Length: 110
Image (cartoon, rainbow, N blue to C red):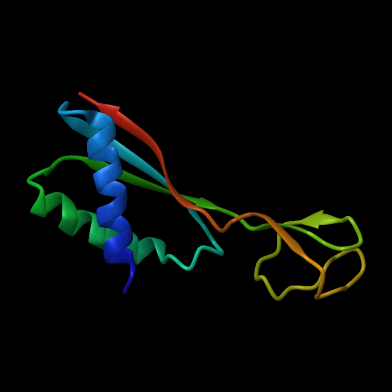
């Protein structure tokens, strides 16, 4: 599971932003097309917080829906990447506009 490495990397980023201050909350954006399972990421975050003696730090994981632009120009939010374009029924020529990211969104400090 790569979520363990992702959780540790995001926690390292949060700690760098904190610059020695106490973390209170970490918010993360996870796109549905990122390949990161939010439940697994949360579990790995909990373990990483314990490893760093950061009990009590809240972790919020915000899902980011997919947003796709079809070759016909239509933009839509598919439930699955394999869903056809609602305007032209095409399955090819797509550009992913949102939903691939997995990034630190916010860090709250005490």
